[in-house]
Length: 459
Image (cartoon, rainbow, N blue to C red; front, side, top):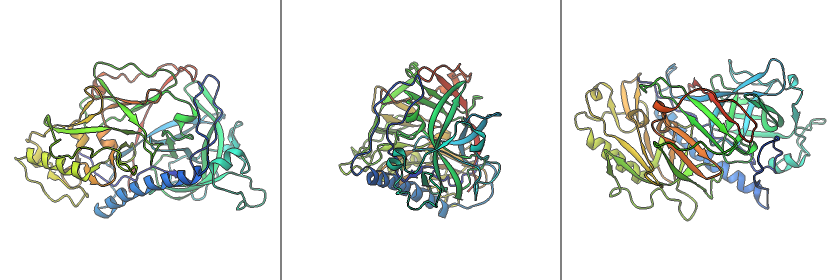
């Protein structure tokens, strides 16, 4: 089923400083070494955040300039799930965007002015008996926010922050409260309470739930051993739903269909998830002859590498790799002629009608690891746009790094094994993965599953 492509705002946010002191975890959570702020910790964190923001702004702004803007109800979605925040009756369920690069959990809070457009709810702190603002003078605030407190009005002791992305510009204050996962409470989690959304529209979501390696993410605060998600596709023949799981103990065992590859560390973006891509195949043919050795590797200056994103839909490859993939795809589709794709800002496009009876070449990504090949489906790399009648390669060129976006991950179960520093993926998940919710236990052993609501975002 075709959709309408609209530029997806890259919801990768940069908190002004994202290196907090060690956080107190709930009972039952296993201890894990925490990163402390050392000399230069603030400035290095700002630079890292600014660089990834600059990249994704550039990618999205390029799309904005090239894509035709209209109000379509059929667009590339963000993936949203609810978390229960605070202790109140009835419970306050807050919808947030799934963002594996996000360093922070944040929600708009009441009162806010301006607020996100309806129907996005606002968390009401006054209804929660466990809600507490972080004082500006606290050690946590001083190590997290570059704020001397001198700018606060008399009597205002809040730990304030500014949180920006290409699509959202928000200010607020840090607080902590109890988050409940199933029947399991996790008291004292730090989150951002935004009281002014200066720019942005998440089309019903109230904020973002960050799952990066950063110390304020859900992964770090809950000390999760692993988490996984499955982003369902409207185009898949199997009736499946998007979902996310959090695990506090050993990661799920691999099946005969799952493959794994190491999660790497980037010196420029240490909080993001990166992998080693060793090659690309089209119809089983390795493109190594056209992709220079080391194209996907980290460079001596820290640039390069291959990262993952759940908020940016397109995949971007280093220019040489993109050129090779485009050439191979186009060379295999001889029964149809490429057409101008400037209407939606993509490069290699065909009419949907011309591809109806054409055999589409198969694309596969090859990662470091034992037979770590990710066989992709058509919808992972060809995007069918209903408005224009175009079907285009959803991969674009870039220089400086590569990024595997949400479209290429769709229909694949992605498990981030934090303890063992590996990414486990299963391309047969749509056929084999059950959607039943497991029982919740203590944070040390729980495996929680949430169904993701697919919220269409229009920009």
